[in-house]
Amino acid sequence: MKDSLVTSRRDFLKLSALFTAAGAAPLLTSLSQAQAAEPQAPVRVGYLPITDATPLLIAHQQEFWQKQGLNVEKPRLFRSWAQLVEAFLSGQVNLVHMLSPMAVYARYGSQSPAKIVAWNHIDGSSIAVAANKDVETLKDLAGTTIAIPFWYSIHNIILQYLFRRDGLDPIGEGTPTGNQVKLVVMAPSDMLPALATGRVAAYIVAEPFVALSEVNKVGKVLRFTGDVWKEHACCVALMHQQDLEGRPEWSQKVITGLVKAQAWIRDNRAETAALLSRRALGRYTPHTEDVLKKVLAPTAEEQAFYKKSGAIKHHDWPSHRIDFQPFPFPSYTERMVELLKDTYVEGNSRFLEKLAPAAVAKDLVDDSFVKNAIESLGGMRAFGQPESFEREEVIDA
Image (tube, rainbow, N blue to C red):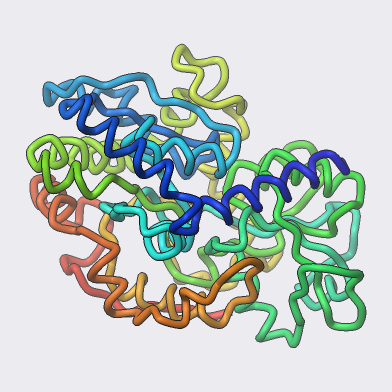
């Protein structure tokens, strides 16, 4: 486990270097060269094996891109955020899912010409604690260590929002005492073993790594993040600005395929779990169908259990463990940047001081293509949403 923590630390340092103008410069040069050499490059998807990637994988598997005449390569699986970011910044892939705060880091830390073009999913993350420990609230985790997937993640933002409510103080180094909680960056695949061996007392991460802890009877859900921030984005779809500007028709087809995939998933949740499982022909993920079903198609009995346990407190909110809605509401981006400024992160965060939330929402996001795609499917009601491209953010611990 020590080696895993060293690897996670190394990945974080690598990402921190990539998210600087100097560190990203060689990769962005490679990007320009790749785009010049192959101006009609096919759709090249990069992803991590988490349920956040589901629309990208289903768009390929159900041929929503191919049916529009696009040339598409098989999605390429990466094992860490550092690997995925490096591949995207250098032009090895041209469509990825990325943690929404990480997209802010990429655009304004490294000066990457990247744009959020859609949300990849909503909710889809939770806090896991040891199944054999008497932990009922976050306050019970004072003086312990919690694993997070990255400092610039919605997981860290929501977790520290809850910390402020409960009077807990995050630290990144040393031994936590009193009301302190130590946060460590860890790869999702390393979190379950760390919880099982007691190296961490809890972790917060994208699915299916919390569902996996339940199936293995190692962990239990303390809280779903979607029950704290209603229908929040976790991962967003990111594309290169040059593709959006230089290949608008191609870009529209790419985003339309992604949106069609999200609509299809909503109507075919159990089948989606089967298609993404390790036994399926595509072998998109290493996860079992049962684990993926627990996330993508939870039963009524499971939902009732979570409401009784307190993992779900807002019984009147939509209660899907993960859901799909592609429109990137500006209000979310603005609120995320505001909260990010109040969130403890390691590394150089000085660029955050200069960010104006409303300006980021306009500059970082290009929603023109996704609006067209949504309207072609009949509007926001196709995703169970009110017919509007505006909303008010609801965060309630």
